[in-house]
Length: 101
View 1: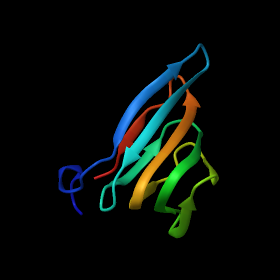
View 2: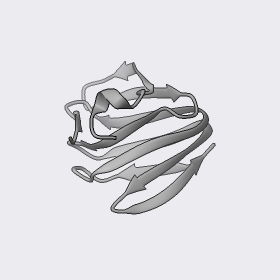
View 3: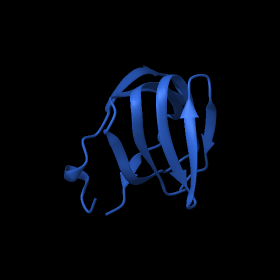
View 4: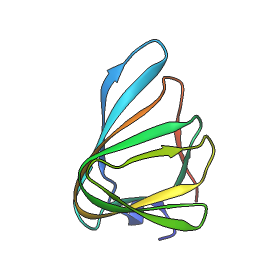
């Protein structure tokens, strides 16, 4: 995929926002995904259901229910959903998701 528009993105929903952190819900179906991107601050992903292939630093990880993954600030990564997927992501309130073309 060369552009963000070529990939069907999962839904991101802001669940909570506090003084120092925010919580996002990520949901999607098989075939959806997020192409190469970074988080400007560290993020913690907690998988609630489904399965996805998560690539970071040229290494693939299979994320499944109850898995927790810490994403370092500025680390290029991507997500390819394999089955109906739901996760929460906790990050600094000022953190941004930036796609890499």
